[in-house]
Image (cartoon, rainbow, N blue to C red; front, side, top):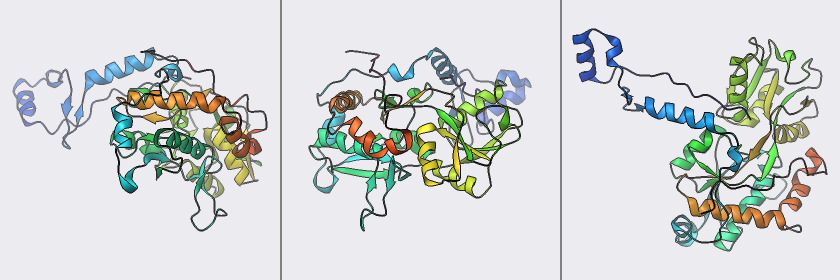
Length: 345
């Protein structure tokens, strides 16, 4: 997967009175650039040195799906805090999608409660059952695509299980488990569209992606590199991926770019659209958690090992139930690779 470059532009020079005085006295703007960062009028720091370090770390990142911790069943501070919740609050708090067909969605045919179902939801129940002894001990929170990382960092959720791609930029902000699914970016468009795939047929077309998604960052990087036509409009972004399908149906965009696994589910919902061309990236979904939640990361990795080995009620059974109808009965191309771990201690 291509590495993405972070923007290094500085913002908001108007909130530091002392700096303004110095700038006026010396009348040389270049001298006003601080080495570590500036404060904007909203009181936010733009740390230039931190940005440079983040960019360097991302450039050095070659296999983000391998930068996770070795499995362990031990309880640490993070897991103990989850177990110490009392009463109705003794639940695993998980950010999920509720609009991704066959991944995380509310089935209107499941009764009055319209419970969440899907491949990601099965995994959540497995994790909750291992940690809390009850697979139903889960508090689900619907988190938009662009709020996944903030929800983890703010402590609104213990983890995100929401078709979230492991990539080099994100591992600077959150910790990931080992991969639990393999996919790649693909183009979804009406069957009648002249678009053939991720190629020159996208010239002059309006492409919808979710804000903060891997799809958008890939399009942005490829357009800057000249690998995507300059006339392709990639400005049509939405908070949630399913919104792209709606915009496509309304004729507001010409195509959608998203993970092939999600695109296949969307095509199953609307017979007038189809996948165009092959996947043009190789990506992996992981469970996202806080950077310092080492014990939880290790525990989830152990759960994933057991989940893959459980042929009766594990990964394969969940794939057969939810995804075989849209991705095919052969799960090998979607199966996660043999896990590799960054650290063993």
